[in-house]
Length: 479
Image (cartoon, rainbow, N blue to C red; front, side):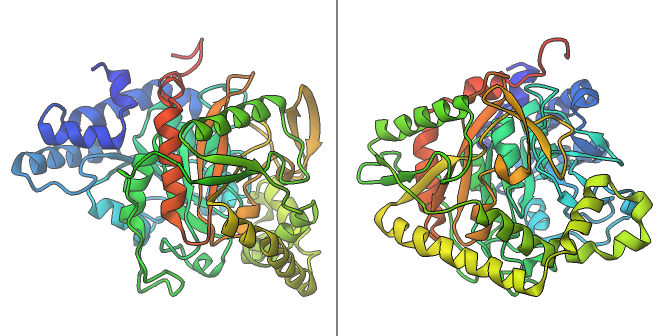
């Protein structure tokens, strides 16, 4: 196996080879580091790296395998989103304001992965305060999509998505308050999971924000399931974390006979790029090929849900940072200033109305999932999002034309932060004309993680991810 193949090895396969003695954790970590040193100057997915420490830990992992004392993720390279705390490392929130902040504790989600044997070799870029569906900041510059360097890898977990696509990590973490796991999963051709609210312990104080989720990202559904089984479960510092612990069966049958799928191409109000449409229809055919019944449905949603989401964010996400407008304005990104100033116009009444809108959405969606097992839609309506896209208006390409739109006009992820108790997994659906991946979202009933994974696992068995993953080497001219 050559070095490039090692870089695209799944965690599942790596663990098998570590256990058999056919591969050393040191070799995998060295391959990830070598790959990073070759491509990072072009992608810019990492904020900080810990390569020497990671190699030392990989040697320790090698000894654990020799002694038979290995843990579930022993020796697997892990890239951690900069939003997470990791003792002794910098957590900048991609802002000049916090560029020198060093954490003295580790978030529980990361600690659980460490306790399972995963090895952190890097932290990954985000936009400032995770505010964009793209990934750039004054502190770290622009993060580029390995499939097409002119296009964003998505945000806010953009560095995690780019690193997975570029083969510089095996697994990664993300957070998701409006699609920040699923947007980069789609644009980078990888898998991302937004768990139901409360399933995974959260970063305080946003553990009390039902839009907010933390979860796993990887290049396969199985790897995402392996991570999810480690990080889920109650924690005594998160009152919202659920006591019921769901263990995902990643070896379940991949026959979807008697499984009913509802789908919407546009959620009732979005413009869909023609290639996204084609790839989504092809993905639906994959589901049919494994026995599922697939039917188009009307959700009864409209553009009012965009305003509802913005008002909700204004009273939580934005409100938590408003003090920076006066104290640190000169150090903030332009898009951060716009977001915070725009939030000032939202009233308590707007907040209540946003909750009422969410109730209305679920009045239709909840009963729909009594009739169907899962719901499928595109993750994003286009892949034509420039690497430097930002609030308030993104100049994105859709159906061959450049349009000035807000982020929620091209991202179909945020409605499922509103319906936060529904598990959602994003998987690849193909490639667009610009060479960038497209994706679909699989949504299951509230707190029914296993059904979402059943559908994703069955899909992955038939939809060959490998050509997309292994072809996601840096494009011509970048080696």
